[in-house]
Image (cartoon, rainbow, N blue to C red; front, side, top):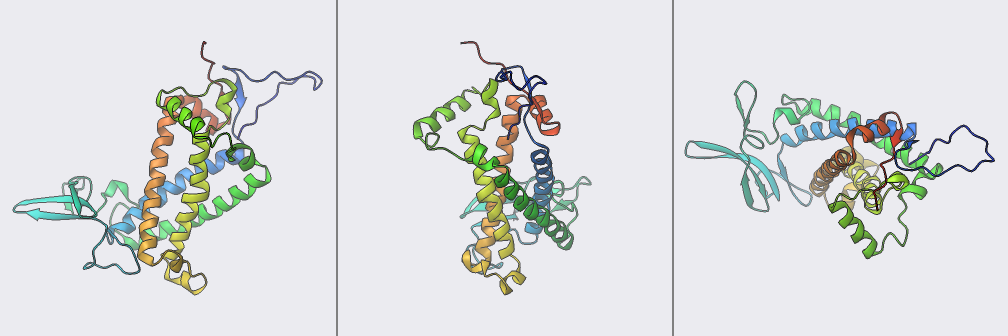
Length: 289
């Protein structure tokens, strides 16, 4: 994760450890490229995926799902008298979402009865074929990029060095202390800011080894052509179950993104953004004891 750029001095002179206020090299070029490629890829896949979902805005468990089956999640519209409204229904519980989900208006004031509005989808005008083209094209970028990143991270020991969670870090007392520190906004300072804390390691490990691979596998399960060479649909107990898991993973990634952006803002957006663009990061100054 972190490469501290040493000063140009004799190798016989021991280098002083970095302190708060020092400008250090934090992210390698490969990490920065993968980060921004992933950001664009996941955004396009999410927005095109929402357009695909608009074609049938219901989720089921099992192998089959059609209009007369009972979904566990549904986004739609309904009318009571002269009042038409949009709603989100989960496990039989309905919440009105007019203007956001199910029933909304475009900039011209024309009402639409689709799950997600035009500003959240690619393309903005309804087109299932175009959405699938965008989604599948960037699925290749995601899959090949993830495989390349994981292989390279094993070779340069990024995973073993920066993401591996030690036995001490797994202790409940240690994890709980980090949760309390984050709740109090006591973020790491000095050289400690260069290392992933336990909560970061858990989050990144879940994304790298859980959510992204599961997204790819469930995506394969949604393609009937996959059944001819890989029975992945059977692993998930049906194509509709795979579709539900695919959807849940997508919004888990959205949740990760929201938390990630919040932590960037709290830690100092200019400094964090500079480190992910140029690689250089200024260590936060240590707190006064």
